[in-house]
Length: 315
Image 1: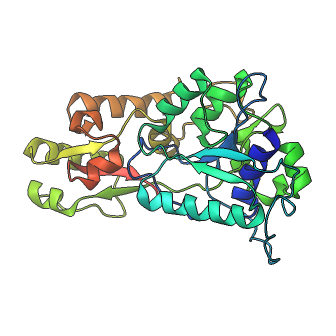
Image 2: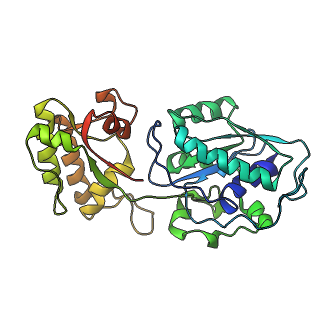
Image 3: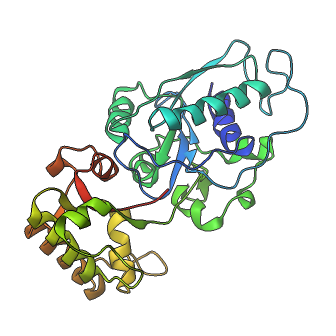
């Protein structure tokens, strides 16, 4: 079963090109995400690898085998089945179902039980992992990687990658660092994205202020968010306690989370602290609100339901 779980994880990436999608009904994941594999059966059932949505090879042009597992890159038992989970609404779930169909074309004798987790993915997966009921294959972002890999709850993919002809060189090196521990690969990056400011034009009209321009500063954003919030029709700038959304504040001010050799934390430097103070002050003055303040699961939903005027978000 471990080989099968690893195989599906690899084929999701090496044989299948997934389109990048932002989760519409989940707590928003960090900018980079990836499927992962669980630890050996002595600790928990074997699991996965998303490598969040990026470089992947095209499916082979050969015809799919008519049955069994003869065409699979790895040896698996006949009649095998695995459970696969990921986040996302119905639109994103269609992409996962398409990837499963492509997998079945390569390994038609394997049954994939797709169990989507559209809301609070991280919380539910952690609970499943603690209870020994986690799916065999699942998406993992950097936070879940840090939660599961150090405790041995994910299965390294390197041996199976070699058998399946998948190389780390097939992926953007910087994205692999998130899913690498002790020189072993626990996930393959499936996507990444650039964050941008997303806003509701009607919120600016309601507050009687001009819409954003390319030369906006953080102070300009704060001023607009406060004007929108003070008007009372919409919340101002909506953001959760998420490093991936705070990072643009820190990076734009010359800050970083660690030294270049990753051996020293740098969150207490003036460059980071100044931006932390800015965000904290915005929250105190209510120009910044959290999704929970607006009754939304995440900031994308807050904007989509027109509860907030501005957010930062990716694809």
